[in-house]
Image (cartoon, rainbow, N blue to C red; front, top):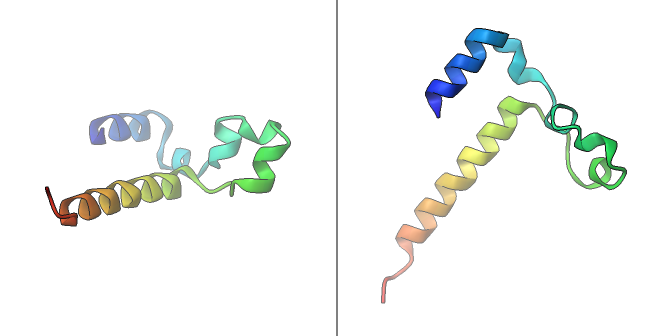
Length: 66
């Protein structure tokens, strides 16, 4: 995954990651989405995604096994 991120950055430049996620995915055209989903940058979206995966991994590991 990191290789893909490096290739995208190499092709489009580092400012690519400053694009807003709802605008990039064109979800901002759906009237309900902007009201309920924050339009954060792609770089912030990856951090949220990574933190969510890390939290899931930690909590699933801490859960007692049966």
